[in-house]
Amino acid sequence: MNTDQKMALVDIGHPKHLDKFINDEEDDVRAQIAREGNDSHRDILVKDKSSLVRRIVAIHGNDSHREKLLDDPKWEVRTAVAALGNEQHAKDLLDDEDPRVSQTAKDRLKKLGEKK
View 1 (spheres, rainbow, N blue to C red):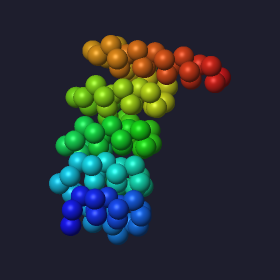
View 2: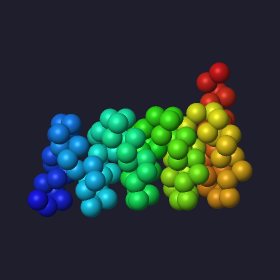
View 3: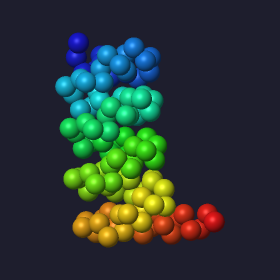
């Protein structure tokens, strides 16, 4: 089965298709499962070898997933955590070594402060 066929099945969103392809060799297939799947799928994909997949978990997952990604080696993943995480996540990333992450954390704290 080629990648396009797998992606079409994943897009349908049926749990049996998502479960079948969660360990697929193609990053794009696993990334689509991170988008379309549920928290149980993201519980597995939060540890994925691909930073693309982990970033999508940070975007579409919950605070528990973002908590696990706070120390991710890739700045793109940490930026997603900073942008979408809770107040504590943003505070934890304020002093990140990468200025893109720390700026995103500052922006997130400002946005969260405006909501109060």
